[in-house]
Image (cartoon, rainbow, N blue to C red):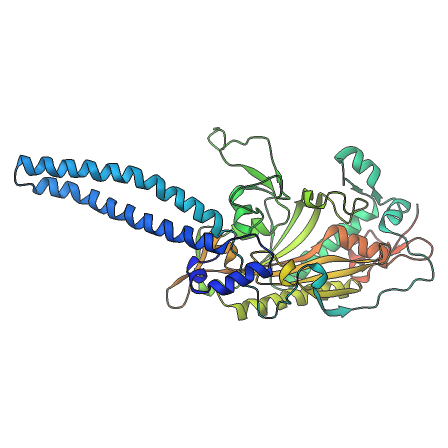
Length: 441
C-alpha cells in the first residue's frame, strides 16, 4: 500500500506505473474516492466537535428556555452525525479498496516491457553442460534411482503429490541445511516460522489480490477447520497455509516501531510451503517443477526508508544466491524483471534461473525483490529515525533456495552416463557416509 500523499503529488508517475505494470486501476476513481472521504471526514469531525460542545453549553445555559434550545440543537447534530458516519465509513471502504491496488513506482533501471519475454539477462555463470549421451529428466532419474515416487504421491496426495525417498531425502535436506548454514554465515538470523497464519499476515505481505482472500485468484490454501483460542472459545480468525516463509517473517514485527539503530534487520526462514497453483492449471503437470508443497529457505531484510540502501542490500542478497548456485556447480543466469512482469508492490526485482538439461529449459531458482514501504504500511511496521520521526520500514525478500527446482537441477546437471548422479562437493557432508554418487539399487 502506498502513501496517498505521494499519489496526489505524483499523479502522472503513478498513472504511468499502472500502465507499465498492466494493472486494471482507474486512478481518477481513486482520487475522487479520496476527495469524497476527506470531505465527509471533515463533516463528521465538525459534527463530533459540535456534539462534544453541547454538554458544556447545556451547563452554561442561563435559563430553561436556552437549555431546551441547546438540547434540541444537540439532537439535530446527533441526527446529522448518525447520517454522515455511515456515509463516511462507506467512502473510506471504497477508498481502501482502491488504494491497496496502487503499485509501487518501479526503479529507474527496471526494464520497460510487457511480459516475461521482455525480461533482460544481466549475468550468466557456468557453461550449459554437453553430454555424450541423451540426458534424462529428473522424473526418469528419480524413478530409476528409487529416490522419487510420483505415482504413489498422486495416489496419496492427489494432483502434484510426490514422495522423496532414500538418498533423495539426504540430498534435499542437505542443500536446505547448506542454505541455512550459508545464511547464518552471512549474518542472517535463522527462524523456523509458523506455516499456519492469520489473514493479516498474507494481506500485509501482498499475497491477496484484494482486501480479503479470494479463492478464485489467490494461490493460497485456507484451512477449513475452525480453531480455538486459549480460553476455549471458537476463534474468529481465518487461518491459511503460507506459500513461503516471507509473510511469517514480515509479520513478526507487525504493529511495532523499531529503533533506527536496529536496522537493517536480516532474517532467514526455513519452512514448508504450500501453493494451490490455480493460475497454472494444466501447466508443468509432470514431475517436481510445479508442486503444491515444498521446502524453501527465504531471506527477508527490513531497512530504513532509503532506496539506495535497499538496492545495496538487494545486491548483497543476490551475491549470496549467486555464490550458492556457483558452489553447487549449477549453470545459471540472472534476469532483470521488466515492468510488465513486476508485481504491483515491487520496486525492483531480479530472478535467478538454473539450467535443467533433462527438461531443456531455464527454471527460476531464486527471486530478489524490493517492496519499499508497500508491505510495511499494510503490516504497520515502523522505525524511529535519528530525528525521532516515525517512518514505515522498507522491506526486501529473496528466495535463498527452493527445494524442488534445486533438486531437479542437481539430478539433471550431475547425471552420469551410467545413470548415477554425482553429489556436489559442498553437499557430501550432508550425505550418508561414503555416498559420493546416488546409484541404481
